[in-house]
Image (cartoon, rainbow, N blue to C red):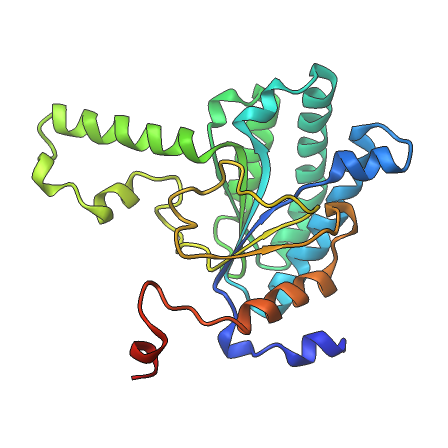
Length: 248
């Protein structure tokens, strides 16, 4: 067993970890390869980290796989990413099932090509009865898109007379978010040395601990995950209160 793993307090794990998997393109460039080579190798990291979270007993893992802004990338990269997504899901769904992992997707699924949507829907229904780790893929997702969508849907409910303006509170808003069935992340990890949240879970990350590492995503492994969790466990989570209030 790794030394780091032995130090993790299993009763103080974050229930929900969110990850911005950054650095595939740069990793590939540093190796003199094209960006898709990096995305291809990033899949191995996904496999490793999903396994690591499942072994630890983390309940929810959200991976930022493709943002709404990523559609603006060069066409060959977008097409390549979609094909990689589909072939990966096809290959991994059996292993997800065997490990009792349930797949979820958040994002604007209507933007995905039909073949990708079909493959995803199949994987969602194959794993829907699993009760272990909830693996949430953020695909064609952005926080601003999600909030705008929620506001429009709430406005529609008000217009239809099914909801009054006075009744709108945080619980109502939360019910209209893509993540309504999941707790908010307590830990957000971003790889590759960038210090921003890039339109990811803007509402849900309000009280998350943010952890940034220079490691590029294709090099990120369980040991790096353990480091992030240990860093999280060393912090005091106050939610706007003082240390004294918490200790009382």
